[in-house]
Length: 114
Image (cartoon, helix red, strand yellow):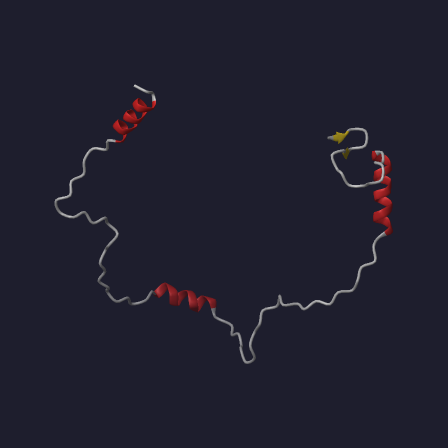
């Protein structure tokens, strides 16, 4: 359980030094943070920049001219399609009443031991 006096977990089986009171724990923590830690230098390779191949250029586009071109629209050719979205029900197939309620009633009746 939790030791209310020290705010520590008493279920731990690790070998630890005796728990410190909360105010002393805070003081020790502040000291440890203030002392700091020497960090090792690390070299990194930055791959975040976009890779642009040699010879690639970017040109400025006239926004208004481009919007006018889009507004004119485009000539589209007529296309014939076959709509297969609707379900295909073969001739002679009949759809009857759903007997789910009757089935559940029969199951309940047999489960009840009647």
